[in-house]
Length: 224
Image (tube, rainbow, N blue to C red):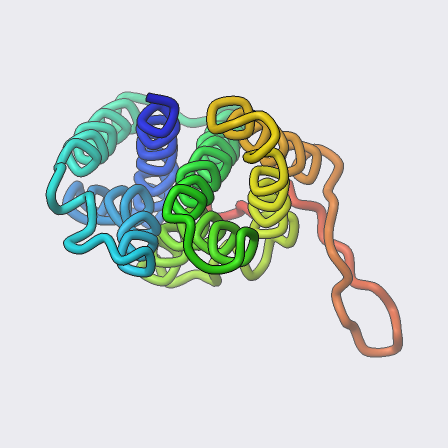
């Protein structure tokens, strides 16, 4: 039940962020739906293939596909009904960051728990890898289709937050079990990503002259 909860939360959240990217790129309704689907189910499909689950769950249980399509349509209708000013544009950026962060945290949980339940390979490497791929894979496909540099490559405390959450989940899994470790993982990713957005945390950027290049995270979503 916990896995399904995070799967649905991540699917809806990433469908919202995917749809918003499509709208910001002035795509039609089909393009918006495609980006929402890629973001919501793309990472999970890659996860399932790597975990030996074929065909992927999104193909055999179309609930996630249907939720993504409905979410994209609702977001599109809400967007077309709005009149934008500077304040509402800030609210759109906040909504994008919020949905993307919830999706990142939720899918880190589903990916890492899938690896842990498989019980194969290294108890950290396999689950953490599945967690990160599930969390960032769909967003990378979305950004490539939208012709922009993937968020995971330009917003540093993004995949790193997922990585940290996956490691914490692998550590806490044998101690507290599935449900508690899942929520700990979710909160760790949520906290790290939220703090990175709020405080503008960045990793080291190599820059000519030995200087460190800083960019605040709030300036990086200029497409929205």
